[in-house]
Image 1 (cartoon, helix red, strand yellow):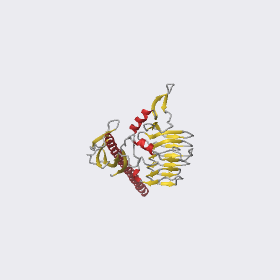
Image 2 (cartoon, helix red, strand yellow):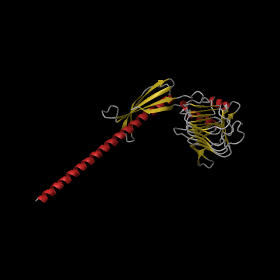
Image 3 (cartoon, one colour):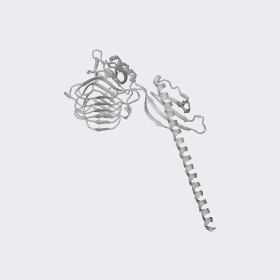
Image 4 (spheres, helix red, strand yellow):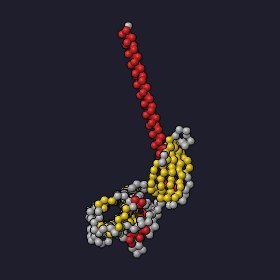
Length: 343
């Protein structure tokens, strides 16, 4: 009898222990599910706030003086189920705009909700001095090569220039990020000259087969030397990567859409002109000719990422080239210059 009673007590203890373990496991599972759900709601609220920010950027791109608030709007999935809501306000300070965007899940009126708030400073301007340097590097600069003219950079600098030395080397964090140019305007100029490059554009070759649009690069900066009009070469949806013993000319713009593309020069390539890229710029190898001659390797560059100057590269500032590009009256585009989450 005593043995049976002891066995019963042991069984009851085991059952109680199992119940406690199952309850604890269930509670943990429910808690983890709740945490995961809250994290998902929070992430979706951030995405909704970004939607409000993007809506404001589109509005400012269309009309930079339009400070009307983005009204509360819902965002739905493909199956029409509502994810949440977003809104944004726009304020003006001098030439900049401040956009404060809110994202709500499930809605702004819900008693229990996830809310995220982001704030971005928007600008649309070309800074003073944008056309005054041989090297305009908004990011980090790895210094090598020769420079005739000035250098300005917005990040950190390392290495050292060879002779001839730049006339001035100026650190200026305010030039980062690189001023965004109106790519649609540049594209139109480039197409009108027959200098437009795009791997994404639908073209056909002489056999009627699909092919990338890749006209020959100009070998001179000037499209019309008499009227001082430069070749405008726009590369959309592709990097600018060249090598070998060849010469390329014009105002070469590497960009397109919201993607950043790079420019890389290898070997003994010579550029009779200027390059603008929001990505990284790298020059490797030599160059050719007399380093004191104009237009040896490259003239003016504008770089948004890291600028790496290797080998015996030579940069010679050409004011006539810079003035010709400036005379194209390319408009600045709307861009985010700073971003932070405030809630």
